Image (cartoon, rainbow, N blue to C red; front, side):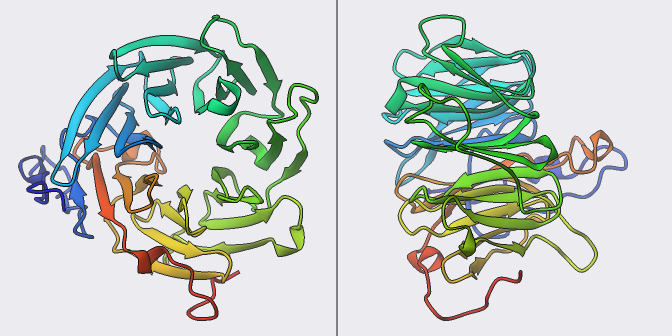
Length: 358
C-alpha cells in the first residue's frame, strides 16, 4: 500500500549491546512501517481531520509529523519541547498542531509557516491537549489538577477548571468533554454551557477497580469508554446508565496488561483497544463482541488511532513504562505502523459472534 516501506526496519539495530535481548520484529500484522520514527518511546499519536497527515509525540522531546500518500509515508517536519512530550492534537482544518509535555508547556505549530510557539503553561506536566475549534480555544489537562483554556492571544488561561486529582486521560468531542483523573475520579463536562456553569455535568468514579489509563468519547457523544491498567474496559452512557457494561481484555493466562489506548472509528461507532500485551483489537459495543483480534507485536502498543476517513489505523510499538525505568532497555523498538483498515474489521455484526466477557 505504501510502496517499499514494508521491510523490518529494525534490521541493523537488532543485534544489540552486550546482554541486550534479541529483538523480535514487531511488524507481525504486515503493516506499513513509518520511516524516521522517534529516538525514544512514542507517547501519543494524532491524525489531521482534514488530510492524511499525522503527528507523534515522544519521550525524545520531539513532535514529528508525517504525510501519507497512496505510495509512501513521508516525514514532513518536527519540533521540540524541552522535556518528554505526552500529548498532541490537530485543529479541524489540519493547519495547526498542539502539544504538551513534561516541560509543563502547551505549544502550537502552524504547518504552513512551520513556526512553533508556546501558547500555554501549567504548574506540572501537561498530559492531554485538544484544539476545540467550536470555542476557538486550546484545552489542556495537567497533573497540576487543572484544565486550562487558552485563546492563543494571551499567556494566561482565559479559564481554569479545578480537578479533584491529576488529569490522567481526557477526550473531547464537542460539546462533550470527559476527564479521567487519579483515584478513579471521572468528570463529564458540557462545553456548550461551561461559561455559565463551570461545574461538571457529572462527577463520579469509574466502574473499574484500578487506575484509569485512557478515555474515549463515543462518536455520537452519548457516552464514553474507559480503559484501566488491569486489562478492563468500561462502556458508560451519560444518560441511560442501564446500558453500561465492562469487559476484560489484553490479558493472558499469566499476566494482566494495561489498556493504553482506546479510539472510536469515525463512522462505524466501533472502537479499538491497544494494550501492554502488544496487541490491538477492534470491538463492537452495540453487540458486545470482538470484531478482529490482531497478532501480538511482541512489545507494548502505547497508542492506536483511526484516521478521519477510518480507512487507516496508526499504532505505536514502544515501551509503556509498565515495568518502571528498569524495563526501559535502549534496544526496545520505537516503531509506528499503519494498518490499512478493511470494512469487515470495523463494521458492526448484529447478533453474531462472541460476546465480550463481562
